[in-house]
Length: 170
Image (cartoon, rainbow, N blue to C red; front, side):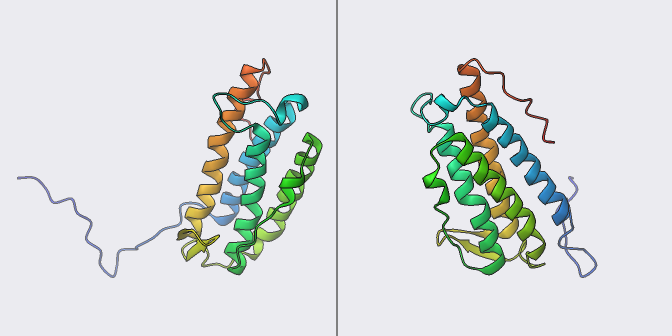
């Protein structure tokens, strides 16, 4: 006979626990953003807006996507309004992208302490199309950046440029 391993919830069983604090999540996210910025810095200017492999988007297009998602999502989680951000559409140089990246980094640090306490567990409808708890929307932004940053690593190697180590997020 096998043992029954189902979890039985009682009033004494916590239904949730804190795995990571909001402050630690912010540092984790910003660590990934610091690494992505290093990749952007390493990218040759003349290839940033042109080079791709196998029909994938250029690294500049990926950076623009990150810029359109990060601060607008944070603002949406705070206010319930999901504003679009078209500043990235105007970026034409690496310097433009780096400036916008740095502005967003500062804005994320400014906005983070204003997140409502319940925002991580509360359901949200992001940009009228993605539904889920706040933690899931934030993880999506982080995961999306990591995924596409991998493309940047492939692009740099294809261009003969040594990318920064993936584990150095300082």
